[in-house]
Image (cartoon, rainbow, N blue to C red; front, side, top):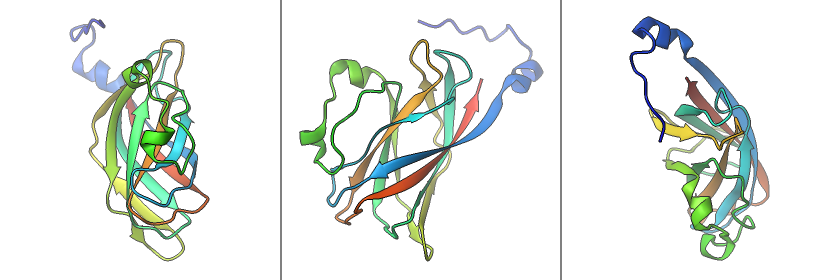
Length: 166
């Protein structure tokens, strides 16, 4: 268990050590029903500042060139194991084991995808998810779950994640 040393630095020193970063990740997607694996495990490079470090995921934006407005669930994990084949139902596609689920930092839903012409755009703010990378890594990983009957067809979405790094 990690030991928290809150008196090691003054408040000003702690705030001065924090870094805010926006990281864009391209994720290949394909699904046509709710509960399908929309995007398989994709690396989020340099999500934390040091190997095995932690960060707070504060915000997320999803951009798709397909003008689709269904909800998308996002899973953030420290494990790089492939969840399965995109487009398969999660129950059929999932290779999740106890070890894989131990790496899950959390999930959130983007429920406000809007058709703004040539793209669909949605976001989630104030997530506040504490994320910890695997030892020896500064990366986290994301996978996506479709929550609607829209046919995503083959596409690539951009997931822009806002991290506060300690």
